[in-house]
Length: 136
Image 1 (cartoon, rainbow, N blue to C red):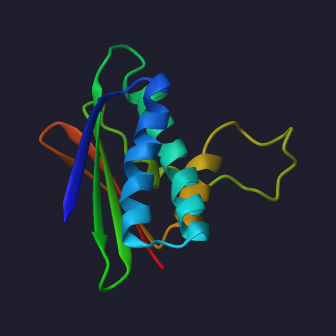
Image 2 (cartoon, helix red, strand yellow):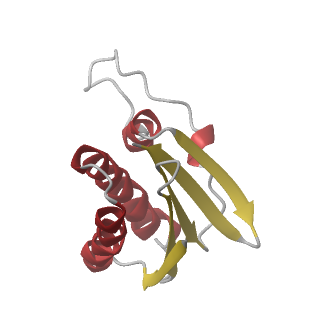
């Protein structure tokens, strides 16, 4: 069953986003360690929407949760109307480089890609759709 939260993409709404997803995860019996990984991914993705998708204007974020309890797979989709941006096309940062020599950016989405089982992006009807999946 898919649940939807449409919320003004503001930093102060982050806790509401977390509460929305956490409630669904707890109802489905998702293990705590999986929940923690998902929360870290949510923080990265949602705050990127706040700071980058809507850097020039205000807008809404839509978060869809779909929990398949039978197959034990969580699917979260984040939708925004910001400029087209596929974070999966950005080259992963070289984590072997000294932190002082490494260009800024990219570590957050790299973390999301490593912690989730699947990460996908598409542009649909003028909206960015970033979908993450995590099994337990």
